[in-house]
Image (cartoon, rainbow, N blue to C red; front, side):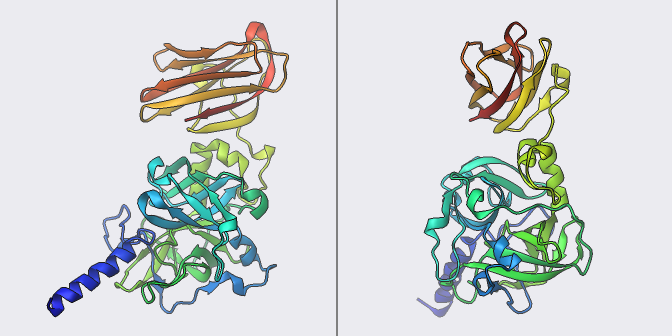
Length: 387
């Protein structure tokens, strides 16, 4: 084998390693192919291990909510963070479909010298995602946020010169392919915005950092979602990194994922009933509340004999869905019906039990769900639509 062949094989081996670390060579939706999802190190590497910080330090406290997200279905990894007790946020380009989430695990304890198995949670339930603002939501078993805490998302608009820090799972594998991508934090500064409206910043990141939270140094709230970088020179060094303003993500959560938005802290407000979305008025198909699947909420009610609650949802691919209505009290029988967009009855549940349930295989289309009281009954209820 000649020297050129040996060099080519070495290059292919290196690329196979790099491509497996957070898809950093995967271009985002941009006309400039040098804007890559993996991001880059700007200047000298100045990220540090979170273990160097005192336990009471706000960065160390926020780092508890950040995880090394393993995605075996796509042989990749990213970074994710808890926005709810069981809701993890990462990038859309990390989890583009529900299939990408199969087998996903979030390790919140992967720090220097610690494998973190005891703080690893299965997060393989795909809630949904948004390509425009490059975010995805996964549900974790075991509700890790109850013990680790959750971040607060802020709609604060940053200005050039504002100080930020990024908490991520990474290491400089360009120089040491056997390095441990333990939990790091990198300080930086906002350098303005790019043509897509993303913040430009100079905090160091690499592929695998995709999906990291960007915190304000002043408030320690999440102000952006890191997702890209520009100018990789082939050794992970480049010009600048990009993050989606959290104000845009928060607005999309409120419009597309109202249940999630009602359960988490937004704009500095703590999660709680006051943040839950209202679905009223939704007393007819014309005013049906649009919801995203999977859907779950509580605290709903049929208040009067004439009251009917309507919900509208879309099915993108043929799916088997289960609709479960749980009444708060034994007295006050509520029932539920499911209709197609054309008005045909698809399924119903009219038992005398405290739980009503419909299971149906639905083709792509729009569907309407009606909740009503039997013979004018009233009651409070919770509603869940799952696959």
